[in-house]
Image (cartoon, rainbow, N blue to C red; front, side, top):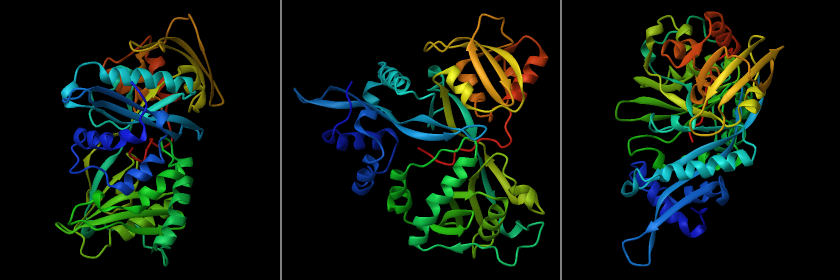
Length: 400
């Protein structure tokens, strides 16, 4: 296994296009900008013999980003964002994925990352490494003709269409404000914005428009129009304040000639409650949008804040690494002190379950009823649930 060099990238791009069923590889400009997002030492590459004697071909590839992740209570952790994981169809079930994850796991811990995160294309691959789904979203279709708001619109909503110059200045700054305040939000490093704002043609089909940006002092929305059925597809919506949220949605539900508005919103988004007919916002799915793996149990549990004080002993199982053991979690004024202990456990679970609980987006009671959390008493389950509870459900907001 090696790290990628400049000469490897054309082949890496071809492998990525095959693995993720893309109609064509990334365009040159996108590749140039992408290379600025990840250093070579954060890439992992496996080659095997090619069909021509003396040649070789890339059969496995993965990389990770250093990404800021907002935790319950507002702390920001440096998370390792696993991405671009692909193994050639010719080399499946030979342990290549395990080799790459092993190498990355060791590097993540050596670099002091307390957490690893990913967005999973398949739901059965990563639990074995301690990952669990930790954040979800609602996919919603809103019917503008039925979307009447309960309160009158303000005299001036302060929403305006933005010029490219205004978008370039406003959007990254507002996103940073929002990400700092939203549990589970992934911050976007400066090197990410040129690609995000470029909106190149490969991100849409021939019947879909480029992005239109609606700007508000405390938010923004970026959407496309699909001419085939006159739907508005919201690509990105950020609102730092409730007023910005309401103002943006009022405009989005009054777009001319639009039959439906499609968006991905937080599970606890108040949009349906703002409407006189909540059915105008129809929920189509609730996909997981972020998976998380706790790399260091002590460090990770001490980074976040908790909603209830108390002490509880966790017994954590880990068949992949050395994170298993018993941990005493003692919370005072919302802050935790965590240490290994030999005391009898109150709660027992796999590291992947603890990882799912970590951001507060997965209820402990559901895992218990599914037999994936064992408790010594009903009170211990209630205490666990209350401690890990959060004011707002986690929402990642960024796909990687």
